[in-house]
Image (cartoon, rainbow, N blue to C red; front, side, top):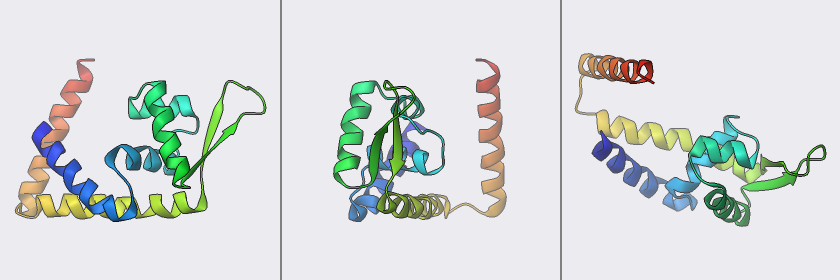
Length: 132
């Protein structure tokens, strides 16, 4: 499964390269767009990055004009993140790229095989989550 994810990540990186995004950059951009995080700390947790790595990543996204950092007026320790209009436009394009790469990778499977694979992976995931 790790090899499949690595190949998919490489293909996604190649597809997003013309938009100037790397894997490390499109993931937090999409998480912000989907509302899964709104602060630097939340985004770092969601992306499983330490504070230093998240700061460097946000520096690059901010330099590209995709994200802005806004210090909270109620708590100076909190830094909120906002997508710029260009950031929102870019983030809206990411799901189509992800879908295209996934469809290319799954193309050899019939619908029945895809449904079987999905069911098996769901069972593995459910089992893993139950063990936590």
